[in-house]
Length: 468
Image 1 (cartoon, one colour):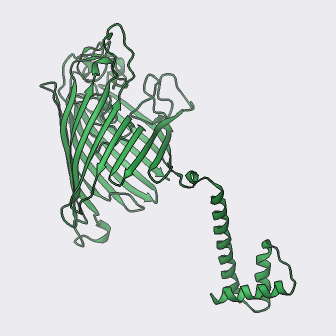
Image 2 (cartoon, one colour):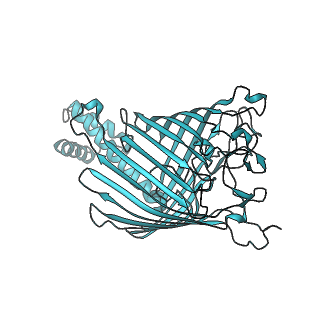
Image 3 (spheres, helix red, strand yellow):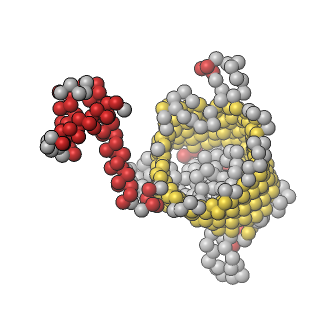
């Protein structure tokens, strides 16, 4: 403070004596004070830094005052992923000379880029908008389960060095009338909680509305409830569906509690009900296909695959639970082996319409950091899951898990390693197979003889992830 007073006093003396200095000559003024012995060299450097900092703050405040309030509250975020993926699927029998070795093997390089903008319109309303690379399927259309761009082209219409397109990945409004209530509308991040991906691919951004209620009672109990309404397809009636005038849609009710059992032990559990209305009005797109072979994988039963008439309705009832512990081993392990968290989880759902092949479930565990925050942080997770044939619509599960098909089962193991701030490496391994091995299945008007066995698949992904 003494240095600043000396500087200001000296400056006023110079001005009083009639010496003129422009604002850009502050450094020259400080140099004169140093030359006259009023300031030491160290004090002069400190004053220059303080003046520059104050000038920067003043300029920023002046600039912000010229901008509208909504622009001052805007936030940008995003991520980029570089992937190498190797997959090997065993093919029982021989359907062509391509499969004389008994398996399909391919290695693909991929990228994914996403950019998000969030703006707080006022104290109760915000808007979120995101764009991303367009993950195309084999027909060249958009893929709701992927934002991957494959080197060399995703589709038959693409090839070397094609320019991929960007799409609207999300666009929705969030209204918070009270601290315990949230209303969401638009193309949104999935609001339904899962401890790991059983029913939903993590890239899906559903379209519709959602209401969330949550109230923390104490550190031990926070009840929550969520009601979602999603439109699945914009249906145009055909000659086979003259009486069908309502779009297929999904209603999801989820309610549960979360909190702490002790100072270290935490939990979260929820019951959910899924109701899919009018699934027979249209066959949903982006169903999985057998890579490199004719026909489709063993997916949902259909009475009329050509026109999209599903055999069963989809009314799922079930729940999920997660139980974990922070700092489980305390100081028992040396610092390099420190484990921040451990946990277990499970899910079980049953489709109430069919009497068989109607269950979806998984169980797994994890260990490490809940959030990777720099070099040396890590997390490993592994789980086993089963999706029976008619347990769930085959357009929504994790696309990396046996192409996202139902009538599948297997393991997924994932290791995340922090490389630096906002950068980490992910190693993933899937060992999956057909669950029931239905022989000579007719699905999509095509004989799936190539998948009459279990047809196991190994898939390895090496991801370099960056976020900002």
